[in-house]
Length: 267
Ligand SMILES: [Zn+2]
Ligand SMILES: [Zn+2]
Image (cartoon, rainbow, N blue to C red; front, side, top):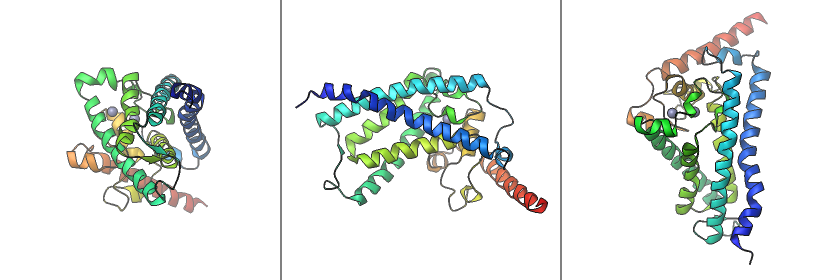
């Protein structure tokens, strides 16, 4: 059998493509969506009056590409650990069926949300903030390119979740790929700077348990509160949700309706 180190080294270009490619594709697509639909209503939904500068975007891209290199090294470690049998990534549905795949994917998202909330809160501690999280908050007005704009220590914290989870829960490779896809899509939406979410995502509404762009944008704008990633559960439970969240979300939801009815009146 081939030496596991040789297998990992020969997989490095593909791992780099996977980690960097999903960031570049997702952020590029979101940038195109923002440009194409800006005048068709998205400008009305821009959450902050401030605009990110060209320098902000250049910094975010460079830092994110550096984060992708960190992710690649961690992915290589995951492949090595899988080959060594320390954790399980399986390829055959004979091992476990599609129901397990769906269950394990849902569990992974819930666990990732908890990991993100608690590491994020810890990184806001004054003793940890400068080393870990200051870099991400250089983006006061987030853009799709902010998604992986981390310091190296924060990139390692973010990357650590996947191997830690896999140590406990075996994942089908499709489940893992879906997790990585969902994670970057929601990450880019959360940093897009405009309220995409319809009124149904408002607090108290039927999708109100999910976070929205307004939720994470307020975190960047104010530098506090709203530490959650996919769900509002932890912020609600720990009393860390921003007091302006509901008001801001609803004012933008109303603005969309006004805009639409105005458009209807014009046409
Ligand atoms: Zn933060
Ligand atoms: Zn952010």
